[in-house]
Length: 438
Image (tube, rainbow, N blue to C red; front, side, top):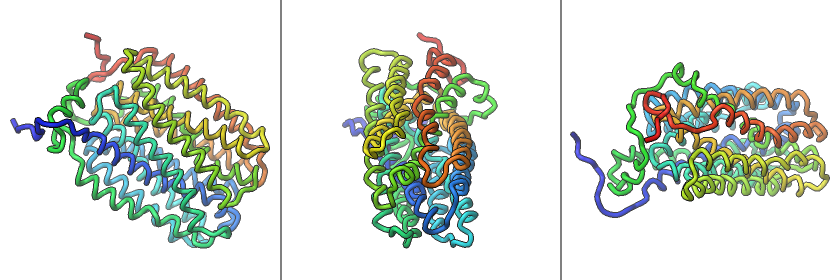
């Protein structure tokens, strides 16, 4: 038996360094995917002269690859582990992110579809790897908060894109290529840091014995073999999570079509889009962290995990509901406030929804389950994007009314369905059977 690498003195909170690296990677992930959302109206009108339907094909290319990648990358990460699996994912998406800058106008549509496909496939590894890492490094009472923190990187990435892109790209689209090159150096630095700092907690000499005991305080002993999808797909718990992930379609709507909505309804150009989008994603960032903290607060007050997570999800759904009125005001700041509140609610929802996977499933299956659920969410988003591309017309804001109504009301319906499927969130053991309470 090998001796434990842990020291016995101090309580160094090393797990939060790992969480910071997850935050960093998620920030880069969302910078890469958000750049096109910010540049979209400019590229459509000034450079490539796409129609909205053609733009939807580009976003669908990303989402179809994302759906495939969630299944493939989730399985790979469960098999080879997060240390190498995460590096593989960020390496793929960084290469294809840079390739956007090489696309020539003559091949604009096809070129962007290919580049977005590769980007989507690589980016699909981010959340399966992150959720698996949180499950390995945090006890249940801290997981939603840790998830909320790293998930906040998605909003920081979405904030940085509208801040940086207008500084680089002119109103007529000049220098648009440079916008796709800014994240390559960040990715390379992250890979170096991850390989230096990351080892599994029980094998990491920087983790004290005291912290390891804290990390494993509610752990269930499991085997490490990969769980095949055929064992996960029949489980109602898998599908409860997957149904919850259909709300991803709303987030993709904000991310890929939000700038178009403000451009078409309020006639904002690339310079005018920056502040509204930044406000929306700053509020989303706070929502991610507060939502993750809130369910942990309930658990620390003696609530069951089931009650804490679902109560928080309900509060999130209620905060999102007012966005149905986003198109009804001619004041852009009213629309910004409503969408910002909904984006914050979504990110709080997402932090808790992701955490339910590590609450219920053994660690060896978490990345695969996140991949399956994410695939369902991506397919739902894909259908919605195709529909939007066919129905929305450039310069006409009236077509956004129904999408915002659906975006506001979906969460309450989804939460009800999830509760009917899993009225009690009973953890599954190593054999994927419910664990009986002691």
